[in-house]
Amino acid sequence: MTAKTLTTARLTLRPWQVDDAPAALEIYGHAEVTRWLSPEMDRVPDKAAMRLLLQQWAAENARLPSAAGRWAVERTADGQLIGGAVLLPLPPGEEDLEVGWHLRPDAWGNGYATEATHALAEWAFRHDVNEVFAVVRPGNTRAATTVRNNGMHWVGETTKYFGVELQVFRLRQADLDPAAPPSLRPPGDD
Image (cartoon, rainbow, N blue to C red; front, side, top):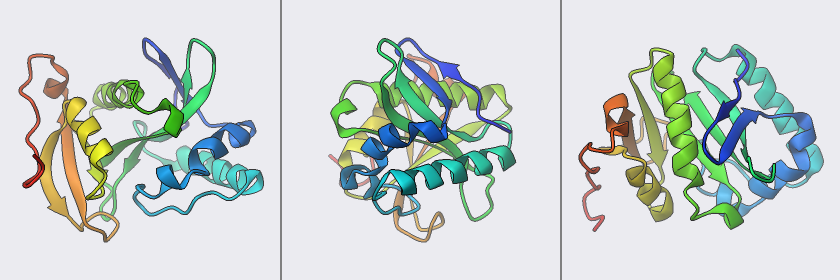
């Protein structure tokens, strides 16, 4: 299935297009962004490589379950492409869905990750998904703070996904309720 367009108060999440390569390179061409991704991803070196990657993502989207996909994230006010977002099956069993975002560094700190996460989680919940997960590399304090601000709850650490040590956070529909209790923190994360 192809990812559907989702909208929030400030963002439009839409399917990637090959013509997005120059703007996508401003995201995936940054080592500050790609160094934290799981599975590991090298910085995309140029527009040609970015175009190929976008074509690969489009082909993968067509084979994903109905709730899953990859989206380009645009700021609605100015149409500026500021990031990407994912809702993808996690290995090894592909029964858990990962929610994630990848924003240009100049878009960090504006609440866009939370807005995109909630849009994708609500989309998943409308497709009979009971929970979504975020996986965060230890040391990525910015992402760990963001997932907790999203209302996600720390589950633990594992090497189950991608064979690397990751912190796992979970979001259920009830967690989107503003009255839900705050997230637990990983041990030693004060």
